[in-house]
Length: 217
Image (tube, rainbow, N blue to C red; front, side):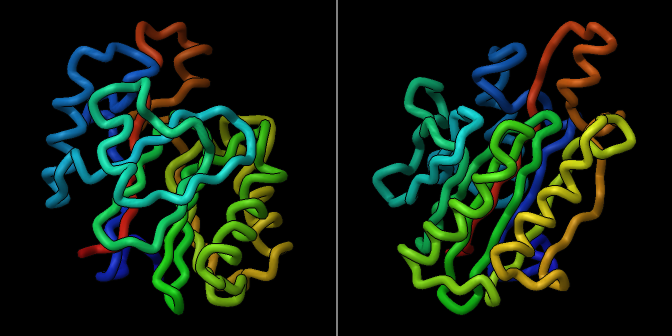
């Protein structure tokens, strides 16, 4: 079952209609309001999220209740890592992207999740590092994992097929192909923000979409 269809979880990605979600990129003026409205539509409170500050490396952070609200209102408190994991219900992992891969991972046996930021800079390391960290913290086994790749740039608009590369990395660590989902939704489109589109078309704002992922309380 796709993670976004699993009733135990909340997994959603914002669109252009939801506005800019980043305090790091684009116009920050309405970001908090945009986040609150997007999250309220999912029945969530902005103080229940944990926001990543992306560094394009392969460090993973174990999110606990003490992290709730970090990066929600103030970018200086965001977690400077590229993946978050947790097994605590009611902690909602929050990732900002505009072409890079937001990858949600779920261990149904141990009721644990992860949210990964994979880019061309870290795609060969961050997925494996996250799986190993989940094994260490939650006793996760790769055969029990389900992965879902969210909206990200596709080979239609980028000279590297990072969708295929991500799947190769996941399978290499023992995850079954049948447990990897990707709707192959490209962010270089009218529905999502794309950094590549921003660069090529010289747009005014380099905005970001958000992916939120958590275990329902």
